[in-house]
Length: 555
Ligand SMILES: Nc1ncnc2c1ncn2[C@@H]1O[C@H](COP(=O)(O)OP(=O)(O)OP(=O)(O)O)[C@@H](O)[C@H]1O
Ligand SMILES: [Mg+2]
Image (cartoon, rainbow, N blue to C red):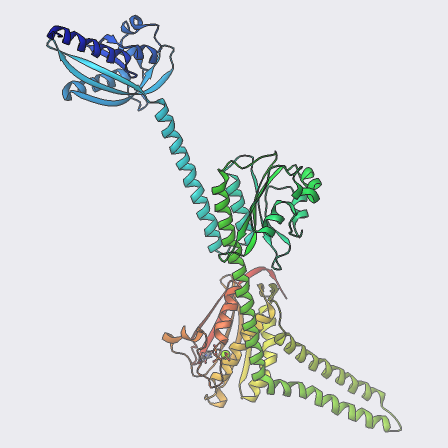
């Protein structure tokens, strides 16, 4: 049977073993002096042995200053006071080994009553690893945040209508910044689905970019051409040996590229739009960490390319619609135009008849004949000018920006509606500014806008007294913009309803389409301008538009 004494000595021995073998450093502090410590403490502090450690003061085991800037001595006093008061205290501390190196520890102080004194049971746990992991985590959170913010910026560029090449270049630069030594590119698939089109590759050599642009896609056409063809990622770890690069080997060598991993970019409906590629200058296989970058890049590039295609389609539909509206307006003007062309033709026929009769006379007055021929030629030119103006309005064309003089455009339109105005007893006053700065716009589209405003004005004066029917066309420079205004003396507009007139299919005319103003506004806005309506001070309505003035002046 074990006696009570023997039992106690067993448990003391066990306690001693726990103290000695503990992986945490344990020290006993009595009134500022170490009275015992375990082997882990000796090792943690790199002391020569237990005796050396016990000969040291607590201040020898800390740098003078703690990371928060406070003095170690003062702070240690404070921590000990708290532990004595509460019985226990735990805190982080910067400790110093015997070799002078510093390391972070978590300190736990427990106050133990012993022979009418309070002994402090001190446990130090090395938290270097934890701190390192915390730092790493904070760093990766920071770079994650920066990467997410970068993605946000690229998406914002798309929303704000930046050009596709700018958007893709920013995307590529963002992805490249996430991994050292990586060069990226985005390629597009041509609309016919057969060829590669350049997208963005700000860091790839120019010869490489040029050679790839226009190359066909296929089952053995490098990484990107093959990825687009298969609709699947293609990983080439060494371009100098892979059979997919057989036809492009020299190009790869010249460009100093060795590895190329390409992933197709899809529409939301699974159609291939292009490819995103990662290149390295040495043979390399993916490690897995690139998957997330590829996912982000293909997703955003897909949005950007689809957005641009949708914009182009919208633009195309708009110009088709504008064309239909132009043809309709010309249809309305047909009678007037026929008359306009008829006039010079009639004069030509008349002059030709006179010439013929003169030529039958014995003495031909050649001077008179020459004058008549001159008239014939002038009338012929006038008729052909009218026809070419009409043709350019009726012809389908892709809108193109060019520097234009708004007064010239207004003159063209006044010429076109002149006869219609006379027919309806409307007098046109033109007040066209000289030496206006150029505006950047499409001539035919601006003609269409002014034509619609003039026709609307003429039609609005249907019930106005014949002697009051006046249409004024003005062009002026105003606050850095070039302004055109068409005012009439017609029925006017209710200010509260002036915005409604611009809605598609809003019309008060029996044979109107109600698209004129809606199309006109979208045309003006597409050139960065504004179109609005207001009441004319002298009665009637005034429709104006402004366009940004270019730096060029056009005479
Ligand atoms: N100068 C004006 N004075 C008064 N009302 C006007 C004037 N211009 C346009 N409006 C009103 O705005 C409506 C819309 O004009 P808009 O040019 O868009 O279409 P529309 O002339 O009716 O038809 P179209 O598509 O053939 O041009 C007109 O029907 C008319 O009621
Ligand atoms: Mg109209």
